[in-house]
Image 1 (cartoon, helix red, strand yellow):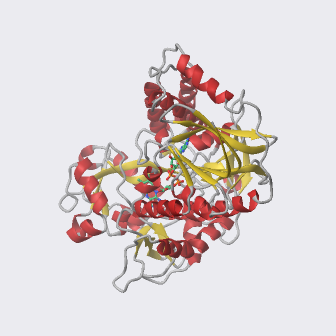
Image 2: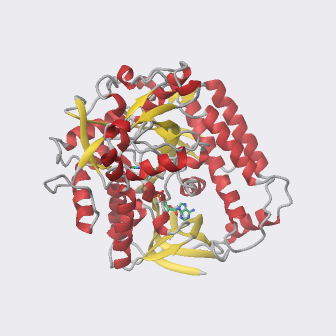
Image 3: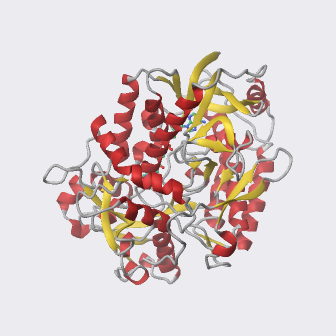
Length: 575
Ligand SMILES: Cc1cc2nc3c(=O)[nH]c(=O)nc-3n(C[C@H](O)[C@H](O)[C@H](O)COP(=O)(O)OP(=O)(O)OC[C@H]3O[C@@H](n4cnc5c(N)ncnc54)[C@H](O)[C@@H]3O)c2cc1C
């Protein structure tokens, strides 16, 4: 079946919806989502969205910019970070005017709370910069933008899964999607495609991410020739519920929660004397694992305690109700009375599809655009988060750059006509599905996925070492070989998860290989990338973005892109 739209957006999280709104009523827009739009992972965001409104204490976007640059361990591009920090207040007021029910101060202003790595006066003390709606901030923003899209008559294709991009003469001219309810393929002919497909935490065994976070958009863009940037930077959030990885938001520490080891010691005081438990996530995750290695995990096990008992029932019930419920349901503890057992969980991907600050996907280190192809949100690397993202900066990133991508696509589509579609655009996808469905191979996707997630967790997570990385690379490449021999048991057309799990596993294998190659190449420690065999940051050699290009018959090819430094020169990163 064929469809024709000026713009097709893949992904109905906050990045996709914000871009759709920007395209307005005079552009024909379709939004595709493999899950029902309002089930996108953005709806799980708990803690808040950062902006220097200065409602609780004096603040400045320049301090926010500084914190983001320092948080990124100086790898973030400062021109893009300046846009992020400077546009943040406008973004919050826009949400407020659309109807987002933010928490309020007693005098009616938007309330703000502390979050990791956010400081006043260029690093002097922790500051309240996160705007929030209890601990359901993503949920309320997603619902508000969804309603706005419905008002604007945006066309939604829910439960349609992107399978491939159609590119012709160096230009993206459409895509092929699979309709989950019927198994039918659909061709979308368009002037511009925006990928807003979110993260890929599912590459790891323990993650806070949703089941849909399998990195489809990245892998599909990569296979279509778009480079991936800074993929070795994977964020582990310090406080996932022990064994499950379900997130206990940093807002818990922003409201005064304290991490304690076996001895009950507030150990973050030793590692980050100024901002303690509110140090950035990469640091806190490492500190927790250092405590566990030193035998100070609770009960000798591999977790520590997050103590909220002193916050009082009112704060727990009103500002942290969701995570208090998670603690009761999933950890079996009442956070008003007992500490919550926590350990680091894979949370956020700093790397992504290389793109500029107007959402254009770029094809090389000079920034030449891939005509007609755009990316925004967690799947993109602009790069504002560099080697480590600060809490509350992702919701901001997806909205600020989602809007800018929408604005740029709107300009672009009015300058050109519809590109020509090549003949039989669905053929390669049909072929892929048929070969999987008819395969008599002996492998199943479940065991391969489990092995992939385990090896990534063991060898390519918070601490990394050349030997472990080489073992991981070999394991991932073996799994890629086994993947070729995969077979599908479900031969049906209706919600065939067996088939889709297998296809998504193919994406995750590609991405795991690139993450591992990046981690091997980068012989230094920076932000979330900690090489035990190269413990220092090396600005002489590694103050660069890594880029990987796909090759059909060879290993992915690495090249580099310079970091944009405008205001803040790299310094030692102390908190
Ligand atoms: C538990 C949790 C809590 C968080 N809390 C915060 C917070 O408090 N503050 C903050 O700043 N950040 C937070 N983050 C991070 C932030 O929420 C995400 O980075 C952000 O919401 C990503 O938005 P997105 O629009 O890029 O993608 P998502 O919201 O992940 O949406 C991805 C969309 O792509 C679609 N999609 C994917 N693949 C396909 C395909 N093949 N075909 C069709 N559609 C596809 C999905 O259906 C979905 O609609 C949190 C993240 C998690 C996991």
